[in-house]
Image (tube, rainbow, N blue to C red; front, side, top):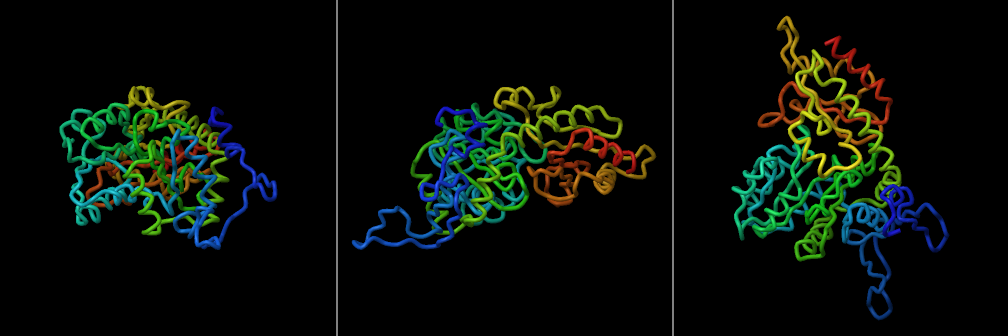
Length: 386
């Protein structure tokens, strides 16, 4: 199945079966430890489940196939996966990260990575010149990119950034959670690592926490990432790995459906009298649309944001109006996270707090699998009621 279409890879999970029982659905391996051979060797290659659990094998292989990666590692959460990439560096290493990115990782970099000794610099990754100026040849070890970037959905040119990072001697890692491997393959564009908060689209059912990191090559940094997982212990449970594999089998259907609905919703509310701005890479007027067209295929993802206008009489500013709109939705669920079958709405500035680059009038929308007409109608009535 090496040359199979991504839809086939996902649906058949590479076509594996359990050789012992001939079961099409894989078993759940729950053992935490493995038998040593009489001569004291571990020829099975497995010693302890924290480092190497057979429950991970198939899901890691499917993600690797979808990403065109050499290897993939599963983690207990997206944060565990992302932070392992940074923990594999050394104190004093210089890293670049986006000003607009997943808020929890941004906070971790500033609150934990900096005191630990990493030299973290936040830059506007959508501006190649800004990245070029910030790079320190021979000192910058990692450039971290998120594209489209949560929750403004700004787009970074992966190929151009990879070229600049490599010229400076740095690795490029891409958080591709919002794009998924169905829409973007960062490794094929020159990235060294690609990370997913697998809780989101890869699983797609809002019923587990998981993360993954995939690599283009098995280098020294990758071996350190592997050791971080084994020694710090941010590993996934066996049942969660099984659930992730189940979710991966419908990834192609869910992503394409959500992307199509998000495009319709973005187009409908673009220019709406009660909406100040729609942020979505699929809109021709969006700042990153041209780059998104070049590096995304089959759609622009299921995530968008809207900025809500205050009331005409001045009784509600944009922030209050946005919160009121979220309060009046019926189908859209007021909850954090994204990528599930249900559509979610969230006032991100309230979540992120002081120091957030997110406008106070912004609502983040995760489009699920409901009919787009129903989702549009629900937002229309919520905007009218606010």
